[in-house]
Length: 275
Image 1: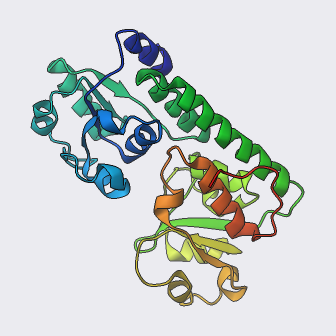
Image 2: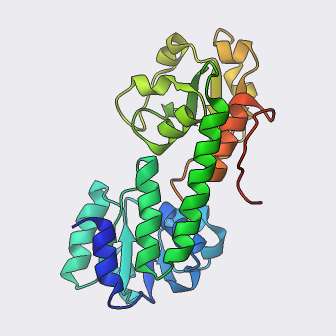
């Protein structure tokens, strides 16, 4: 049975009232759906990524969740993702008889399906449909606006040292393509690969989108490699990781930020996110 069918079946018993979220993307989606008041606990990263839940009890990190902390909150639903750590955690939660919903928002469409599934589970189907429709409108608009442009060789940096970037198969890889870029990181088979600086220099990106949280300005950091075409042409652009790198409910805004970073404000769109 698919996650959507599982969620629909569970929703027949009534929406949950005490939810623990073990992932910031799922937390942000629940908040966007209007279910903030149902959350009774979150993981450490969620508390940092979503200000509205910062005061909630914390139940450990993404990779070091606390079974005791979750159980103490007496949740009627725990939402998590299928990482190795959280897969094992799911089994332990189910041994305690706690309801668990596992979701995997990796690709763009999987993020939309996650929004749909959570909407059904918490009784916010209309809100979920509206959010998905808004994302779809911007996706189509950006794709139309960038059609026919020569895609610049681009890289989206997640972390500088060591170097991690967007590779093949993730929602960010798809968004780069939709926004009219050729993702040089897609030459690497993993969604979030680690790469060497030597590899990046050889890949010769024409645009560097830098979402590292380091306080050193992106332009200053990358100026150490003047041979990079992106550096030589002044095409190093800093992006806020919180705005673009979470597979959550604001993919329309994230996609627009990436498209603007690649093509500037002159990009003509027939649909933009609501303010």
